Length: 497
Ligand SMILES: *[C@@H]1O[C@H](CO)[C@@H](O)[C@H](O)[C@H]1NC(C)=O
Ligand SMILES: *[C@@H]1O[C@H](CO)[C@@H](O)[C@H](O)[C@H]1NC(C)=O
Ligand SMILES: *[C@@H]1O[C@H](CO)[C@@H](O)[C@H](O)[C@H]1NC(C)=O
Ligand SMILES: *[C@@H]1O[C@H](CO)[C@@H](O)[C@H](O)[C@H]1NC(C)=O
Ligand SMILES: *[C@@H]1O[C@H](CO)[C@@H](O)[C@H](O)[C@H]1NC(C)=O
Ligand SMILES: *[C@@H]1O[C@H](CO)[C@@H](O)[C@H](O)[C@H]1NC(C)=O
Ligand SMILES: [Zn+2]
Image 1 (cartoon, rainbow, N blue to C red):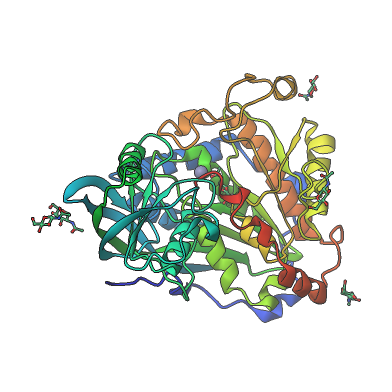
Image 2 (tube, rainbow, N blue to C red):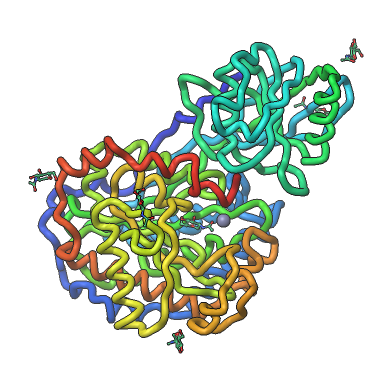
């Protein structure tokens, strides 16, 4: 049985290595960036062209999507890299490879009867055979498992926590394989374990089957039947890339870090989710080149967000404490153009949802609030700072974070209808994670507003970090040690699990 190690990765550096002399800000002949000037350069037409480009890329790909491992995702990464490399004097561009085992087919039989199954992303290739044992509850707690599963195949219901947690517990009890059955209609094709394996307790071959097939097996086991399962999984290890581009100008020790994700779900081209966020920041990165900056600005396009924030998690895992300390604030942008939008700011100070980010997060929320209220003069709401997107790993590492969004599968309230227009009682994005998430799904009015808000934040912090708490490495280390572990296993993963 081949066990695949998820942690292997490498980095390829393009362009010059970060220039230490850039500690002294270079203004050159370009004027220092200003919020108003940068915002004025953000045009709906440019955003539309980029969205159309992503849609073309998705539709050229066999699955008509930009999911990790697909041609559509590789072409998305190439497109972003080519766009950003048009400014070799302005940005240092690096690609960080993340090796991911992408699930493909699986062959499962139960007492020699074939069951339709798929192997899961992050799970190893392999062959396992043994008696099937049904795990009560959801398998999210160690106490759900019997003391020993030696030589068995564990059968576990999908839901609530990342499936990687379930497979980790089963493996630690000696299970040789796992079958996860769905908690909704449909197959588990393209499903991910959502969490890198613990190298001390590697994953075992895991296949996903339908809810009906799973419930039928549970009923047979409850009736006292013995079921011998034979399980073959096949995964293809593919390298997928995080893209990082950092200004050569500006203080390299004090970085404002702006991120979005480059992948889509399997269901469709993913133009609002998350084409919109990644294209907003690509457009801003392009327009920023007309200006100089005092603080370095780093843009990242993460891979494998939809498979469990894997690109961003890997990135933060690889950063030394010294490098973490350089990131004064990380801002995350996703779902920037939802058709039935609300302007939502992450509740970094915990005033609305009682989940507070690391020091600096409250100040970032205050700056977004100031922008929407005083500059754009539009309404806004707050959303829970739950780590559900790529900023989760940054919170866990004690790095200040913030962001805005326009809404996903949540339902717009009457109150929000009064504030933003649109339709109450309808999701912010009816096409969330569906094949209808195309360029027709975008609300350009929202997208422009959101992109200008990101421009404001980029320009503000590229000029000065004076509004943030002072950087204090001692405090940062302490935060990292206590951590934001509560974000693990909880709300952060609700969107996929
Ligand atoms: C699964 O079974 C099919 C049909 O028997 C076979 O062609 C395929 O190679 C098998 N796949 C694996 C991973 O064994
Ligand atoms: C499955 O089939 C093989 C041979 O076709 C047989 O030896 C074996 O006993 C069968 N297993 C079960 C559990 O029925
Ligand atoms: C907020 O959370 C803290 C710690 O998690 C808890 O002690 C406190 O009671 C909560 N406050 C409210 C108003 O829910
Ligand atoms: C969209 O992308 C952003 C930026 O990476 C990410 O934080 C967010 O979770 C994604 N949103 C959804 C709903 O997938
Ligand atoms: C803000 O929301 C209120 C309702 O709460 C609404 O009357 C007002 O028109 C909204 N303002 C804008 C600029 O949309
Ligand atoms: C850093 O933070 C720690 C703990 O909050 C504090 O004791 C220390 O004085 C701070 N150091 C500096 C240089 O501000
Ligand atoms: Zn998504």
